[in-house]
Amino acid sequence: MSFAAALVDYLVRFPVHGAARHTAPLFTTDGLTRWTDAQLDSTLLAVMKATLTPQQRVGKTKHSKRVSIATGLRVLDSPDGEFRALVQWSSLESLRIYARMG
Image 1 (cartoon, rainbow, N blue to C red):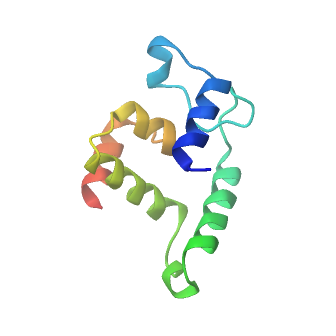
Image 2: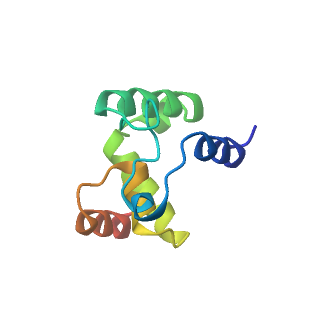
Image 3: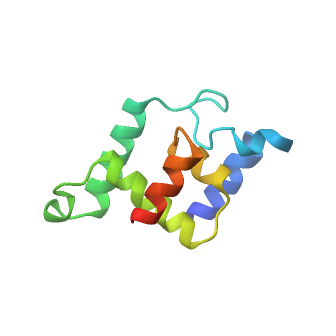
């Protein structure tokens, strides 16, 4: 199954409507509860272990992955609300700064 198909299935299972789509977290434990930092850390670590060599993982952190994600989403002209839902930026200003850094 592709990520896109899995994401559509998830959005059908946990729909968010109207203005809430700009602030609701995309990834949740139950459709409502935002992932904790520990859950995000362990998931990102597992993804990095599965996709990067040990040498490529040197110096990579949750923060560096968030910057990479923000940069990639900026290149795709994704809306700011999508950025914030995916990587839990505390403010739009910090999101915009880090998206330019990558």
